[in-house]
Image (cartoon, rainbow over all chains, first blue to last red; front, side, top):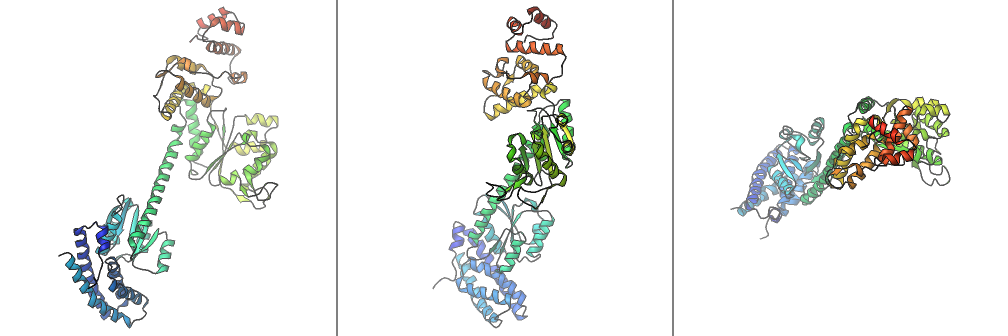
Length: 113
Length: 447
């Protein structure tokens, strides 16, 4: 199965420093788990500003770990919530995030076991 | 280069820190929000990398607070925000670059930091050079000497720097009039603006007007492009008109008009250009006498007189001769990486007895030659080669009695002939006994 992410950039820039990799993955998992919870709460209350805020927070780390399967999802969510367009797509995108982001986190955690 | 990373997201903050520290010369300190950063020693940082969406302060507010604190650090905004208008507005507000958090953040950030590093280095170099210029033109490091005469010059210079008054510097050739002018400029409020020196005696008469006032393209045959004149070049700073006494009378009227109106019109143009600058003039001539002779306009003299500063000739500040000679010898030795030289007593006496018609400039040349000629670590009398072209008019610059002049001529001849009284008596057609009597009375000296 094709990997959901690519850590070669982080590995290369750290000179394969395993402790740095561990630190980055732990931060990724902790932060994004929290951001996803906040994102769901914002969706429940239709607070689009907050939806935009947390989508904006998740996006950079998704790009750093090259989680390409989620890249378009988070970029669209960021754009739609910011411009408040394609509003019907926002719950769909968040559902996709709810399904895939925890899987991504679990897979990443395996890297540091 | 010291860099502050202000980023609330732990993951991205660590990521930025790591990619910046990949470059060995960059030292990163991280802050989780605007308040934590503002509480730190913000002045220490050359560059600040700011997240656009901080939890406590907007990027614009943080930049505003930094500027209010007088912090001039370069700012890079790193953001996931891809809105072009936001980026443009930030760049307009003085942000150095806007880096989007994306696939190539590392490359963009490294490029930005490399450009910034070059700029920071240039700014530091400029600051260093400004300090060097200040130090170079500090009165006492520039004009050597502690005599009362030179202290009087310093006192006048101090008066000049605190205002924009026109300054007229008089003094014989080689006394350092241009140094005085530069020292006034670089210690005044005009210091960061140009100092433009024009030597009137060095410009052909027919070119003076365009040289000073500039010309428009096509103003005359050969004017194939527009040229700005020295007045415009010096605008905001200081224009130093050296040897102003050499200015032809017809040009004096034009100069007077410019000084009165404080505006200049380029040759071939109609539109006047406003001037805000300090004028310093210098001359070795007695302008009052030139006015009497009809060579200089009375009204221009009054206009340029301003604060007069007379730089005394070296023979009138003899107590400075030795310290100047030692300074020039040390300076020359250092520049040429040779051992510093002492000056023997006999050499010192020879220096003190000479009237120095070429003043400090001549002393410098004589000492540089002596430093080279000296065989050991001491400049001896024989190493001091005095200028034999000193004219009678130079001697007459000194106000002496006939007896004093006679003694000075005999003394000069004795020095020139290495103390050979017989030869001096023959050459000057005076009795040997007269010379011996003068020596005995102490009116002239053999060594």
